[in-house]
Amino acid sequence: MGLGLGVMRTIEFLLLIIAILSVPVLSDLILSKVERRIDLTSQIARIASTIKAENDGSSSVSEILLSIPEVQAKNLAYLTVKLVEGKGKAKTSGVTLAVEPANPKGMPPALSFYTMLLPKPLANGDSVTLDVLAAFTHSLRPFPEKITQADIQLVVFQDTAHYLSPYPVKVQSLTVKLPDARIESYTKLENTKGLGSEIKYGPYENLPPFSYSPVAIHFEANQAFAVAQELVREIEISHWGNVQVTEHYDIVHGGAMSKGEFSRLDYQSKPQIRGASAFKHLVAKLPPRAHSIYYRDAIGNISTSHVRGDSKKTEILIEPRYPLFGGWKTAFTIGYGLPLQDFVFESEGKRFLNFSFGSPMHDLVTDSITLKVVLPEGSKYLSVSTPFVVQQEEEIKMSHLDIFGRPVVVLKKANVVPEHNQFFQVYYQFNALAMLMEPFMLITGIFFLFVTCIVYVHVDLSISKSSASYLANLQWDDVRATVQQIQNTVNQCLSTHEKLEASLRDLSRTGDVQACKAARKATDGLLKELSKELKPLISFLQSSPPAAHIFPKVEELVAKERELQERLMAKHSIIVDSYEKKLGGRETENRVASVQQKIAALRQDIEDLMEYIDEI
Image (cartoon, rainbow, N blue to C red; front, side):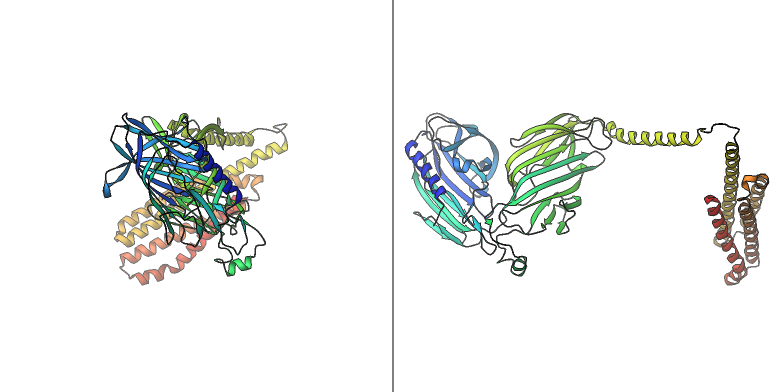
């Protein structure tokens, strides 16, 4: 089928070592039935195995060895083992078993071993059924390694038709699920069947330990080979009610390298033919109440994205600025906010963040992920709980209004797949009073700013208090204070006018003439008092030389207000008289129409004069 020379040499070398060293080293356990299912419908090779193990020895067994060829183990991203409970259709995956790397003596060095620890020892004659899931990255090798824009992408996958185990196997079978595309070629052994997009090997019976039968499958795979060479996720917690998530991606197409020229015209006219191997978009599944979503790169915001959501999830369809062919790269940032109460909780006097670890992108392979959890300033006694092994560090991030900086928990991991999207927890202690520190600093800063301004305005910077400029400033300050008092008094008069207008509205609603007359009498008394207050203020301005340029406008303002009083009183008298004579509404409106027009004009004049005086 044209496999690469280096690949064939690897297989031959592995076969040679196993042929020399393979001996039935472990005879207490027998694998009575093994069913393997390999899913190659994405760039991640997922191998699910259901293993039934029986203890055929005299002593109990507390652990089971799992072997993986070294050439595959270097690409192993995820491995989990679950105990199968029940029988038949009632079978369910139960307890997850602890899996640890092992180095048993006398085993072939070309194999990597892992120990599966059983929850209780397996006695003689007993059996246990396990579900094993392993995910491998970079296991689909492009062949050919370089293709043009018009070529489809073909890949090769290698494995063994026999289950490679240190234990003898009674019965085993293998099913390989491929994308719905053409299959170039595949290894044909005894009991091999090709059914559409599936290839079945077996069943094979009575296999000795380390039985190995290499198979290779060459098939079309045009699905997205999106690989994040580096992903930095920053989760910043604010106890004011928000969790802000920012994700920086460096993406590369990990499939067959593109060669030759790229034609945008050909791609747009026939994208399924002239761009079959490229991927056009990525899909990210965000939490259901994600908000303030953005998508940008070094140039700026990217508008080719679509968001849709419901009560269970929020999906964002991300389209890069250009389609990605093999070897092409792009870098972008997405960010979104989340409600604090959905992800931060309290337990036993501590708060903790409960968040998913991996990328929300569908079927994305991440070569290196750095996850930073930025806690509020003042957080202490930090601890982390993760469902798998990660590298952990701590650092400090300085942000606006910070004094000591915000503690940051940094988690790093290589070779991450969607199966790593499990929840982890970051525990910390935080005093709610610390939330007030930044607002207090802001208020204090503004307070001192205003105090500084007040001191600067009122400080005496003149050389002599007897100078002409100093005396002129004092006189002008008196004039400004007097004008301000006059404006305040006029505003009080205008407020009194509103009360008089309100009494007329009450009259139209209730018809109580006596209450309306009483309101007018009270208004008359108040306006007379305000008029008395204005007289000494007007006299002072009239006699003050610095007020010569502003006095005419102030005098006009007072005159306009008095005229407005007279017009309002006239309007009040007409309406009250009409009610007493029981005239109709239309006739009353005709009687006050001209007065009302003059009132409106006077109010506008007063407003203009007030603004003019404020500017002076």
